[in-house]
Amino acid sequence: MPGLYARESRSISSMAHLRFFPQAVVGGSGAYLTADDGRRLLDFSASWGAASLGHSHPAIREAVDRALSDQAGASYLSTANEPCVLLAEKLLSLVPERARGRIWFGHSGSDANETVARMVVAATGRPRILAFEGAYHGGTVGSMGISGHPAQQGGRAEGLTLVPYPNSYAAGSPEAAKDAALARLQHLFATELPPGEVAAFFIEPIQSDGGMLLPPDGFFKAVEALCRKHGILIVSDEVKVGLGRSGRFNAFEQSGIEPDIIVFGKGLGGGLPISAVVGPEAVMNHAVAFSLQTVHGNPICAAAALAVLQTIERNRLAENAERTGGVLRESLDRLAARHRLIGDVRGRGLALGVELVEDRTSRKPASRQTALTVYRAFQLGLVLYYVGVRSNVLELTPPLTLTQAEAREGVAILDQALADVAAGRI
Ligand code: PLP
Image (cartoon, rainbow, N blue to C red; front, side, top):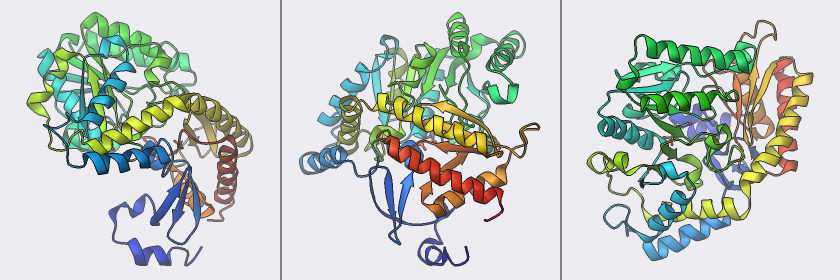
């Protein structure tokens, strides 16, 4: 479409983030964004999951307005302000007993995971960390150090060991994927990685940036048993898929496990920068030495986060994620029956992935077509993103408030985008 982006190139061409969103946003309401040319865009990304309540939710606006008038600047001794204390009490009530010790607040998923990595090593005296291949735990030096996404290859820490996340589609079945991943972990413990040297295992209850991979039934129960046997702490990174998105408040609940440490971010602030780590005192006490930053847990973001949690609970948004996610999933399955580009549809609740392949037998990743689909969908009014270690998985993480009508509207646009890509109309 020649000329379509002339306006954007004039207005925001110097922004590094142009790659992700080639148009400036001037407003938003619910599941929709308004672009600077007045176009309404249905947002199936929700800013990578951060806009958990959608855009401009009244509960967040009111909480922030109130905190701005009453509390602005009142970040007493970094985090001991009223909204923060109320938020801490609320979050602690929402995690299993095992993790219900102390809480730490940060600005992002990255600083939270980085802090956990440092705390667990200090608390246990063990030098090594386990994480999954394909895992994205953040973009700071410390959080890249414990990540397994190919984009972060250069940043890995020396003490990091990566193990494969089970990929049921690639392995042919969930059972095969589970067996292979567990066998690799057991082999590692029996050979090059003494489990007594491992402080913690960072898990993603659903691996999002690595390709929206769902763990096979029983996989994390087996991982939990191994970790308990060897005294390895389990850290659940709930940054993208937690807080109701998976259909449960905590995504790890669906695997029936109880992590020691839980990391929240993104959707916690509904778009405002706040993250949280919850864990046992023996570990969390090390946070004081490592990671206090001046405006951590500031009252504005804490008030927004409290409003987010209250709204998720009051409006039963985890249930909505499960129900509307089911409708979305069924519509995507129907698309898969018609579009040969679609190799697999997967996920849970409102954390869904659509893997695109060049052909269904070889399963060769259709990375170029994936990028084109995202771009074409954007032209047609739908915001999506793509993930995966081969960049060939469409990621759908819409607001938890998504309605069934909006779910169908988005899939209709995606249908058209896939057809246009397949026919070479873009
Ligand atoms: N953990 C997971 C699972 C994520 O998906 C992300 C970001 O995409 C992060 C951590 C890092 O969070 P942030 O971008 O807020 O630093």
